[in-house]
Image (cartoon, rainbow, N blue to C red; front, side):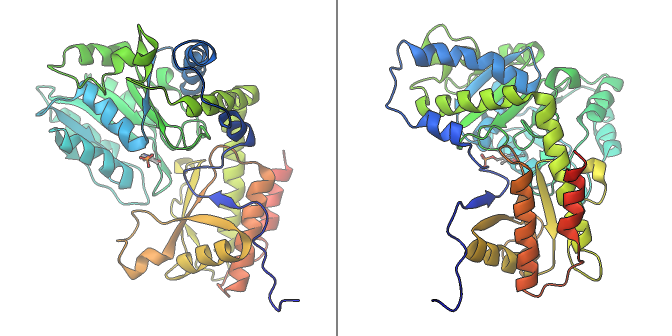
Length: 403
Ligand SMILES: *Cc1c(COP(=O)(O)O)cnc(C)c1O
């Protein structure tokens, strides 16, 4: 017998904030021969996806599907409403707000990006200031990120919309829900969102490769007034195809569509309300465990101290360098559990970078998976002699035991 026992055989668990865990139903639905792309089952199924996608985003408006990741949907959305020289306001300053801002700059937009620290949400007073300082209404769109996956901040979209309405500003409200759709509560129409972008590989539980741009009539009118829109990114033929190929401007993403069908069936069988409530309860268990580990001199800290600002899909944690990297490496090598790297919290070439990590809890996650992840972290903290408060897993169990 070996002196040290390896414990990694068994099902690996990728607990990073995307790609998320893929349900067996989705994998099985994708495991098939290529379908006919001109007629038959695939064509009918694609039309049926649209109302079910709308229900996930809580909208009665249009949706265009792209063969793209999240970055692709940023560009897709901007390409329909932003021309060179147009102005956009980016209220957030974290990694993904910066990414969308960069994409807008690349398309020739004049970008105003506000700043705030990485542990708090955007500053609505600054947003108000920028909108008020725009008497000629040159700001054409506000590019907002709902859940920033690097900091795990969940921004208040209702308050942002209320501010824009109060100031009577006509800019489009464009929202990145790539991390939040299918996890945190998202209500496109009720919140007054004009354009909403999402991707397949997070709350929607499908491999990376499908991007979604939802848009309302106000946004479509802005699209109609554009001097030009690239043929590939144009959302109109995708949302209102005359011919099947126009859904995707070319060959359909055949197998992804079967996977998406299976994922939407899972989501709607569970019900949106329970999907949101499940993510919330599981997140509460995770926060509780982390808070207990941070007691008694333990170095672990949640990045977001205010619970109402925390995402229910991802949790960003500081544990001091180099313990973030040590813990991630140990868990992957010894338990088959992979946690997310820290993102955007410290320069990637700095020693501090190794003090951060993230937990993904989006999509296909349930109570035993979260308790297994927390038990795994507890094991890693013990194995590495990282100081931590005791009773964290028990405290998380109490949260889930209350039903
Ligand atoms: C993951 C993510 C993105 C980027 O998606 P990719 O598929 O990696 O291009 C953008 N915004 C948010 C909020 C995300 O979570």
